[in-house]
Amino acid sequence: MSGSESNHPPCQTTGTCKYCPFGARYAAANYLDDLQTFYDYPNLQIISNAAVESLIMSDKDTVKGVNYIDKNLDLHSVKELYAKQVILAAGAIESSKILLRSQNENWPNGIGNNHDLVGRNLITHPYLMFEAELPENPLGLMPEMDFPTMVSRHFDSPEEQTNGKYIIVNPPSSIGVKLAQEMQNGKPLAVIRDELTGKTKLQLHVLVEIFSQRDNRLYNISKRNHIGLQETAIEFDQGPDFDPRIQQIQLDIEKIFTAMGAQHTRLKTISWRADHAACTTRMASSPELGVVDKNLQVFGVNNLFVCSNSSFSSLGAVNPTLTLSSLALRLGDYLNNNVLNSPQNECQQADNKEVN
Image (cartoon, rainbow, N blue to C red):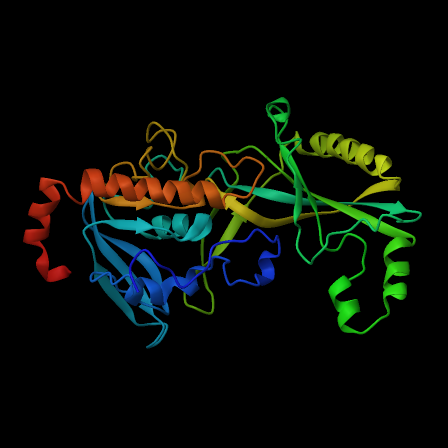
């Protein structure tokens, strides 16, 4: 099997990602064995059941490795792992918490935190659920499968930017009839058709862009969780513009429901569950404005990078996965072209072979 082949087929765009019938859905765990054996990367080692506690600095400008808890032993077994380049990719929550935990005489408030920006400017996507009553549903309006396959980006537009863009999702819970389950239960087609076309409630869900506020932040607290890491405290305020924005969005959704023949639109719930948390080590042009530069390098540290939603300068209205994937590829190119193959790094490799 050559390196150009793959054990995983390409996406067939069925829109049923929760249960891909082709095994094409990406999940990092599915590729761990491939990374170690299929592509035969000789310098790759995956350490499982390990939780990073903090970074180790050799001086103010250079990180030399990490302290990590080896859960294969016990929650009090802390080991050191050395590296020439360190990339934090622990998400918007844990990446910033690791930086904050890494305090030393050169970085008394945590690495990269001389301007008190690590963990600040936290942004998430509030998840809105709107509902309306449909007297009858002759068209059988509903998702075809148990996945939100239909998303409208009509309001993810420049015209909406000032107040916050948003997307509309047609959710699987829309009419309350689980089609696949009804079929598995053996209900006759006529009965299922009556359930689908009768009086029902429709739902539309919304992910809305909100804007960063410096006081919205996260930090470590002394209590430790079941894997031995410090738990997270969050300070978050919606801001004065949030409620008026939601009222305007409800008016837009009501127009859509009215066009569908539905009545009595209401905002069923607002969920603040930290969807797509971002911006806690935000990218900026200077250390006074952010934590990492345009190449995701932490200001003031030569060999430390943060590849995470936390490095976003803003979140937008849509899921962040593709943007983060692009940043990861871009960081890989930057490291290959400017860092790993540089003469300075070759000298460093010769001097530090014992820590490989």
